[in-house]
Amino acid sequence: MYTSGDFACISMASANNRSESRRHGPTSHSLSTTIPAVPSTSSSTSLPLSSTSTARDTDTRRHVLSHINDIFKCTICFGRLEDPHLCPQCSKLYCYDCIGEWLDSGSSQSCPNCKIALQLDQLVKVRWFDDIQKLQQNLRTLGASEAEEEKLVEKASKGIENELCPMHGKIVNFYCSTCKQCICEVCATDVSEGRHRDHTFKTLHVTYEQHLNVLENELEKVENYRDMLSLLMNKIERNVELIGRVKSVKHKELEAIMVSAMESLDRQEEEKVVKLQAHQYSLLGEMDDIDQKLQTMRCEMMLCSKPQLIQMKPKIFAVCNAIRMNPIKDFKQIRVPARLKIEIPNLYETGVFVVQNFSTFDDNKVVYSNEFSDCFGRTWRIMAWCVISEDHFGIYLELVNGTPCWYTNRPHPSTLLGMECTFQLIHLEPEKTISKTIRQYFDRTPQKGWGLRDFVTLKTILEENYLRVNDSLELLYNIRPCSPADGQQDVLDADESLTEQ
Image (cartoon, rainbow, N blue to C red):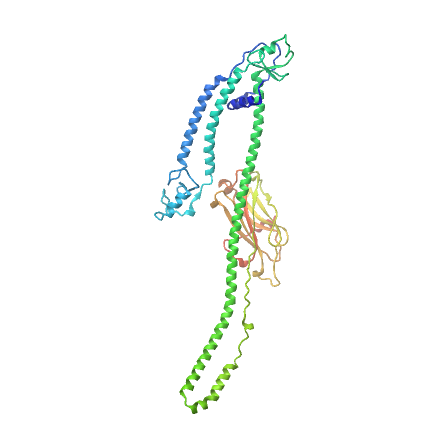
């Protein structure tokens, strides 16, 4: 009887013939106890052909590996690529350190291949190079695995040929379905002992194929299970990448907040200092006028005679009294509070909306993101709208809870507030990411939603590879309350057609 280890070896030996056995299906004819002895056949005659095919496949793999090694090497050091980047003009591959040293050397600020002017930040990172390295490793591993499998095939074939019945010393070529034992022809036909009388037999190779198919099905289930784990792993990795992307956006937001806060501090300081400097200039002018009058009176006192000095006394007293009659301002009236306020603008709400199963969308298909809140406590959600008949993919911001109307007692355009929305359709190549910003300002008429009906065409999405391999789109949103004073650079008008739906 074969053990589980024997079946494992046999299943590996038949791996190359798996598709053939499934195409024809296993033979399941039951044989009675009176079946005559049938000599077992050996499958070892197919081994020389298999060995020749394996050798040919091995040579092909080596040839492919050689070509891959020649193609994917640094054009500067001619070695194995490390952190590969390519020239955006000629697409030649370089190690990041090699091209960095080349451009930083000062001797050349151009691509070593096409000679186009090139800066380090213009290089394109080769993100798919890890897949090429995995392919190379898989080819090497496959070569080693097939060589080992060939040895196991040969060993298993010899084991099948040479396995003998422990009782009669005959080759085992039958399987007793009743006893679930592998037996020889003597065990099957021996009437005197009667151990297998009235039992059901099958030829060994038929039972072997049946068991092999069952085991292969189980192994395929495990492989499918592993594929599901691998798919989950890929989704987690992409999730990590998206979190990193959002973090990068928030870093830029923090930098902008720091710049804005510093500018605000500078502006407050300047306003306060200007007031104090105005008082300083006034005091300096008054002091200069007093200095001139003092100098004039001292000169006259020095140049006049004693009788004249006595006569000038009332005049000098009058001038001095006139100077002292000007009141000196109390410092409390001049003092400016030494207090500065850090003004932080409204914070953005940033996230990624993943639009699933994009290829199944019908005309006027609408999908919504999860709800989120802004810094004022209002609840929003993103809506993606697919209009196949017009070749449009639209993005809208909808108000779920709260009111978007803000105004003061004096309705003036400068007092109106609204929402600033930046939507990005993410592409694996950062330079192809589509980014559009809109602002919508509100008066006393409530608005429930607005956005861009023609954010991008469906043709662009399909032809420019914005779809991920799992048939999804990734939309990054960056949303905050704003006012007209925030500026209008690179801002589109909002399409309010959603409110007409």
